[in-house]
Length: 135
Image (tube, rainbow, N blue to C red; front, side):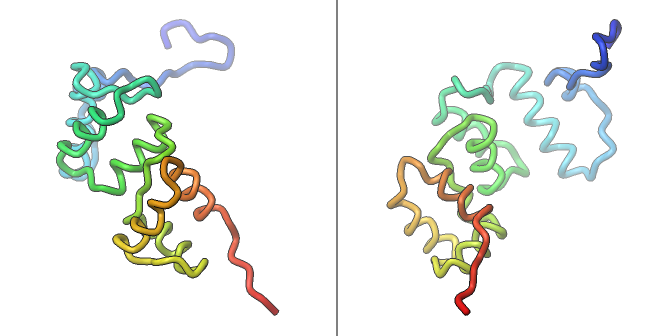
């Protein structure tokens, strides 16, 4: 920051600054970050809790390099979509298996549909719920 405010000396760069940055990342990752930054900078993509979720999901799916897990994770964490569910997430599937739930993406998605419109809460519970064994 040009004028630090107490202990605050840095701010996160704007999407436009990110889009213009020379990133030392693998080409595919840098390309994905650039595409996201461009969409945010131009207003094509909005990632705030007031954003149109269907439009955001559609735009995110069009970003090269973002897969279904990343799209659903962004929907869950950046947009606060309580129904976003990254069923293909490796850790989520492992947690589901540990709790005797379907561990394949399709089976877990089908099972989680009973939790609509709160599947995101189910994902968080699975990620954080310890597996207990009976003695």
